Structures are given as C-alpha cells and as structure tokens.
Image (tube, rainbow, N blue to C red; front, side, top):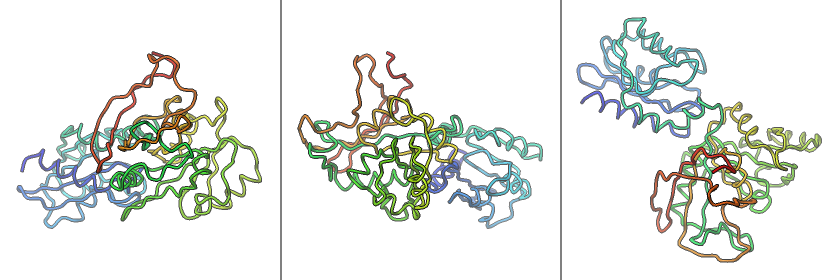
Length: 368
C-alpha cells in the first residue's frame, strides 16, 4: 500500500466517530511498520482517548521506526485526555504523516513542532481537502466559535410542509425519515420554535440503533412553552435549552427545576436575536445544529444569516391550499434579485422522495 491508501483507511476509521465526538473532530490513525499495518484506531467518544493513543495501544509489534498516518495534527495540550504528541514521542515512532493542520489555537502547528523537536519526521497535507470535507463542522466551529446550522424540511411537490389544517404526518416515506434521524445523530443540537412544540408536541429524539440524542433547543421569545410538553417533561433525561427574552423569573426557575437550561437572549425585530443565540450556544460547546423549525423560524434563520446549509426532502405528493404553509415564511423577499442564494452540493433519492442539499452563499439579507 502507498501513503495515500493508508491515509484513506485512516479517514474511513475517523468517520466511525460521527455523532459521538462533537465538538471534537473525527480523527483516525493507522500505524505501519515494514509495509504492514500493526495498529489502528479512531476517536470513538468525546472525552475518551484520541485516535493516536487508540492506535498505539492496539499495536501488535514494537513501534520503533514505525510510521503513523493520522488525519489531523496530533494535540499537544492537556484537555479531557493527555497530549497525543507525548504518546507518539515515547512510542518510538519515527515518521508521522498528517492530513490536516489543527485549526484549534491550542494546537495550530504546535503539535507538528513538538514532534519535529524530538527528531520525528513529519509530513503534512496528505488528503487535506478530504479531511476538511469530513470535518467541515469542526473547521467551521474552530473558525467562528459558533455552530454550523443546517436547515432541514420536508415538503410536497407543491411546496407545502403541512395541510391547511396543520397536519404533516407523514409527508415523506420511511427511508427519508430514517435519514433525518441519522442527521439528528450527527449534529449536536436540534432547534425548533415554540410554535412547533405547541402544535406538534415532538420529542426531537434520535430513533436509530445506537443513535445519540442531541441537545434540544427551543426558541421561545416570550416563554410560552407548555410545562406538560414532552420536551419539558423529559428535560431531566435529555439536554434541553430554552432560548428566551422573558424575564418571568418564577417561570424560569420552574423550567430550571425541571431540568432545562434557560438562556437569556435579547430581542431583535420582535424575536430573540439568533446571532446572539449562536454565540451563546457556541460557548456551550454546541458545534452544530439541525434546524427543524417551522416557516417563521426558518425565515428568521435565513434572514439573520445563521444558516450554512439547507437540506430539503421533496415528496411526490400535493396538498394544495392557499392557507397551507411553505417551508420558509415570514415577510419574505420583495425583490427577486435579493433572494437568498444557494449552491447545490448533493442530490439523491430515498425511496420515492428526492433529497437536495445546498450550501448557503454568504449573501446579506436585503442586498443584491
């Protein structure tokens, strides 16, 4: 095997950590000696050993003179675990091939420097773009300090997310709904507006085998969420945040006593300021959000510029009805030239449903 093949294997291992390591990156490592793989590992769960130490611990032969292929620059600081650079230096490994440099300021080249200062040969940049693509959430979070936001919705072919009576179960088929739960596993948080909670009373949990429940985030400007809603009733079991501008301290205390974390956010245009909320959620180590809001919150998300990606499921059905809601509501855009602009990244089929994935361009609301 060649260097690129070993790194490709390390990337495949890294992907196994998807959904389990946030806000850390997915990292894989492969150790080779005399043309044979003698160890491998990946970062399996947040707070546990990193890929490099997993790989070293798995080795079936002495490590002196071996080469390590690792998708991301080894850490050189104490966090949840000790520095990986120390383990590499002590192991006898003499060559390290790194995919991407770590954008984390605590590392950012210092890991490479520590290895080289201990006479370990280091090469960087092998399959860098592939690793950045795999870890787009981590790189965004490190760059901005705010979550990567994915707006998700399912709609009929005539652009409706519910019937005129508000019913929406089910627009898409089972395969598409399974894919949604895979996304719920992948991202750190699931965010909805209070109207969604009042109308649908959802649990917002991940229902796939070995799936992880993300932190549930309810945008509730005036603190209207019912105490008897499923989300509040299970807040002691599943992390639940309520973002509000309300100063009703008695209600806030009751929600806190029931297990919720209440985040105070100032108002902007009559609703909570989503940009401020993103900063606060980033401080809470929420690196990514699946926005499953209704049409009002979806428009607010687009208008505020917090949405990075749009995922749309389109069903071969039609509801009709002038009163039936579309995925993005609000006041809308007056001039077509000022539309939110998207770039398609992916398209696939789930049964009879079409899945479209778009990145949002960095246009500013109201500007051409």
